[in-house]
Length: 450
Image: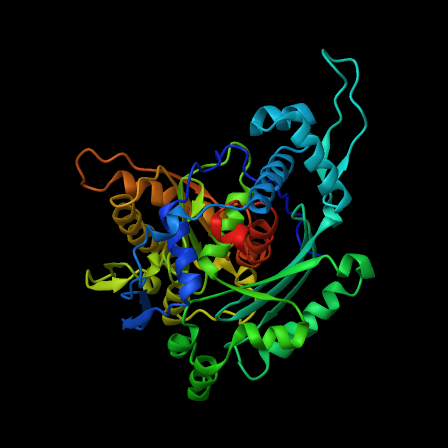
């Protein structure tokens, strides 16, 4: 069994009074099914999109919601308050949501009949009327999350409150498109076999996190040439839908991990932060004003492709300086042998000066990426997570704080740097939680219409 993960939606993020720009772009992009344009720099794909919507971006802004849409939005407002504030009462929901008490009572009755919430024992002995605490029901819904990584696969099952109920892990030399979908399907089958028929019917989502344009970078893991063709031509969603019967959502691995981190944060959750997952390469994400910035192609925060400097001062992408692959290359050059299994199982205590040199160079590179990102997007918080052991991650966090403070930039206030909460499972957890959030909690126009 995997780690127990607490799921609590974000109470400190106020509901939007309108459609955020990026929410609308994502909605239009989904309607038009637009494809991005890719280019290669230093062996790492940089995703961009030069295509524009065929109509003005504000044309959809005047679209109103029908009565059933307003009802759904109110239901999700109530579910959000319950999920993000376990034990909240009917009166609290009415006060926090601005909905009439009668409306709240009717919505609570509906979602209770749907099996999404449960009521606790009445609390007496307080001022005013006795209150009944309301909680999300863990078995009210389930979601499957999967990460297809460069050298590993994770598949897990979560419930509506974010408990990880089961976990499958596999290490490999490269993701093999001819076998991996059967492996995932077998893992899903094993994970859900303990559920009852009623619970199985409540599996509504299957999210898959993976690097964008994985096929064009397979040379980075020395995959056979035929794998490029296989991954380029394969329809991941169709392959997994055919094998499992579940609707599949593809999510960039950095975005998935970033979303999982937002959910895992203790209250009060930050509305703005920059996120890095240091894995075989760098996955990243951005949360701005409580919204995950995915962009039209889903690859908005491709921060690992920012140019920094290598050990010789030559321009290089951050992927090849601050990733575990960069560390592995330095270890091999120094005569160390590392296993092909879990990176956390390496003999980290023996790496000495090589590890210290990597932490220094990685921190310098990440400091430049952070500064350049905050020059465009205001954010006072950076979160670093990764597949390395926790003590190594903490050393990197401390060194990054020093490098940010040492930048020769006038009037620059470095952001706070924190270690992430979830570690290696963050992308798979986020892949499960993000579709679940969109189905039951999100009130964006795209998700309400979907």
